[in-house]
Length: 437
Image (tube, rainbow, N blue to C red; front, side, top):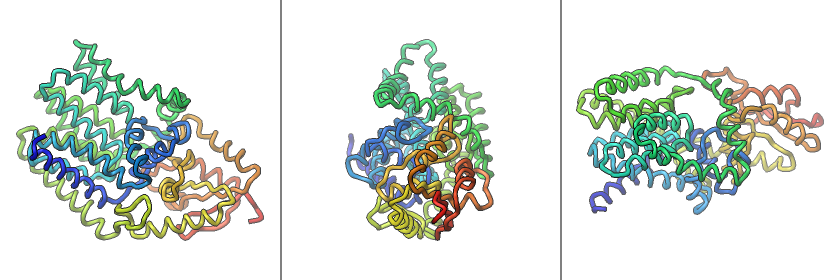
């Protein structure tokens, strides 16, 4: 690698680490980190904890956590090493405009997660498609196989385009299986394959309840589809079909957390073209979005965490450390009881305490497979002979906003069966199965 390329790679890497650290830690990012943290701790996805996405991303990024411990910064570093490599190749295609891809990533609610991971892999597909590599279609197939095992709906749609593009050379399509087969073997050996099918496919009917379009995202979505459809009509470029297939990322939740990753590979393709007017507007949009979401907002209501916990060097809400310390103290005081955290922040609290999240720590609609009721029966069995506390998120008792994903099943179960005990400083309510409390 030339010295110039090494320097550019290092600059991209350092920039990615800084952007991730000064971007506020969002729940999607914490959940994604938590999946990798569980795997690094020896747990098996789908068997020991629940996910509705494929396991590749979580398995791959568990490596640095296993090597260096429970620190989000190492998760950031590992992601940055990969993203910087792809940005280096992007730079070689579009030059300084690659900076806007970097800034656009910074505007995403979750800088590093399976959505942005898939977005950058789609850019890798576009780069390969334009390359002169002899076996580029095999490499593209491998990448699509990785995406299938990261986020199934995106991967399957990309695979359809790939099959169409290689309909005269179907032997290439076996490359899709290269990442899939070893992961299936891993799941089968660890007795998690059936539960994988249940969480990722059979339970998706409940996930459709999360359908939500926000006002901010709809105009961007309309622009993306209009641009891509008109581009394909003019060029018949297979790269455009890959980009259209990637837009399935927007279903069923059309919000900032999904629209901006959807835009990242589209922006790269746009910068490859000659439409200076659209490029100017995209650059302007990206700069404004980056300044607002990464610079202005953090200054107003967040701070860099310097406490020696897993969020070290990560920008967080100003009162988050106090919130986590209070919860940790409360759980210590009640360590003789079984405590269920039916909270949006359950993963955050568990990882802060170096504990592994369980099925009950991610109770969003569609995240508990085809039979959510079984978890209620497990609670009944578990609490027959012990004291149990149930902490319900304060959001359950506030005016419900559109787009909230947490399941009402557990709230209704707790309020119907158990006794109100107290309200915590956070506003979360505690219920008990012991009337003498």
